[in-house]
Length: 55
Image (cartoon, rainbow, N blue to C red; front, side, top):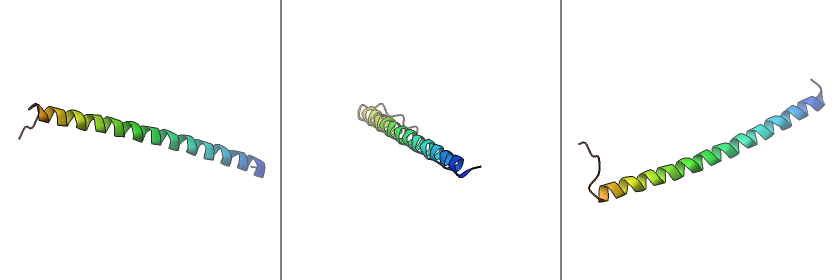
């Protein structure tokens, strides 16, 4: 592989890594929102005596 091709491949890999990192950040943000919503829902259920505590 020529040096020019290697540089092109490296650039392509760097771009792919950047894109994947952006996707991971978006997924983590979405999971954080879902967790927050789930915890708020659980807290509201417990406050209204609707908790599912099986113990």
